[in-house]
Image (cartoon, rainbow, N blue to C red; front, side, top):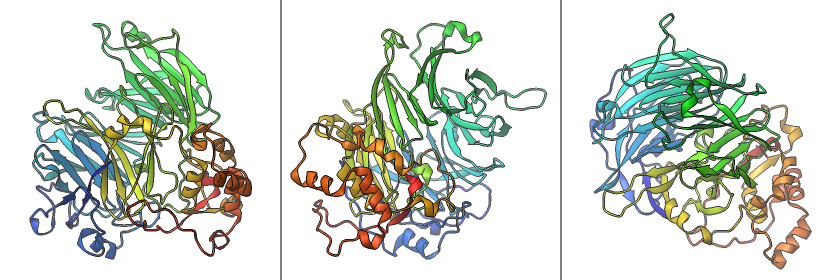
Length: 581
């Protein structure tokens, strides 16, 4: 259920210097009104901020790809705050009890496209005063940090340099963390106002637990840093980075997930760490409160993947791993006794499915950091994946991370492609009986931001289809893009990233329950005839690749059933390489 949409109508001034800026940065020095409604607003056209920015084309990003100024690149949320990054500026919204979502901050215009975004919004009256709420943006190796005011406006804290491209930007408490795969981390301490850059082993994964930052490295080691105590070595003033565990096979740690159990003894918590390796292995290690000095012990090992593990999540009830083969997901049920993971009867296999998400060969379709599939949600609740099949898709599929079951699907009202999305766990109202709500936030190519009520969708799980996408739905998604043969694009494209896949591996995906949808249900004669006429799913995909765009376009297109909201705008087709599968 869609509950709201936001569109900007102000024009931020260009950032002139690196000194602190107080108050809202709008043209004319006065905050511009924000349009709020319960339906998607009309297209801005050439009026307002986004229209003027379309006339002033943004400079290319450091990767050399062209940028769309009015496109939502990144969106993130924390408690009752939302941060939205456009190409050259960002804005923040806050949920107020009486008036709903209100715009409270707009950054100046930056010189380069924003590539990373982070937000922290702690409770009022904290020990850090005005630095309880902060937003950070990164471009290349440069990081800008602002302090946010609860009643509106903000001030620039500073500009920090990592020295290498920033590939991850996030907060651990009130400490800002920036990492790069080259093995460099940067930490800004909110108490001491100190920025520290530290070189470690090449970083392949990370996670945070409490005030601890854990780093998985390509040498098979897991390191940790207490960013709250911010310990510095006396001999060289370097940040103290300690080795916590080393993989028995010394495979690179490509995914990390830390779970802190409820306090089970006076000496501390039982710490559980799940990690994936470059060889496809999944391991679980545990740390007993009574054996802190001896380090974590290996608890379980699973060898179910043939590709490197790209994501892993250990929650209260499930262990979820995702590998580089078409986002292949394997899940297990976790047995606990008094909150601690148990071997009796132990973790049992639960599901196997794929979250197919194609990447554009020419960089269109939004920022990759803004299209993360998840899983999203609290670790003591049901978590979800967000599936965007093709780069220019206007439809997203929400699926349970434990079983792959479809929760719901959402589609932009005006057919504008979705370029960024995230899930926000929002605190409930102070009114009696209210509960926290879960929202899906989607940013569109036309600059609008939509909010969808996932809590209501989760309550009606039994009404959604049992599986993932059917073959017909997947083929409908693939019709929105052009597929290029591998031979013609292999020389001009880089090697596939972990989130990319190959067309040949779609054979296993087509036989998977996540793609075949509802099993056992009788198929209609039309669907059966389509299967007989078009061959198998993989053959039809290969036919799409072999046939040119002209031969694929029928002379008289058959009318599609209306969704009740008018015909969607047809986005331009994005050319994909075969390696994107």
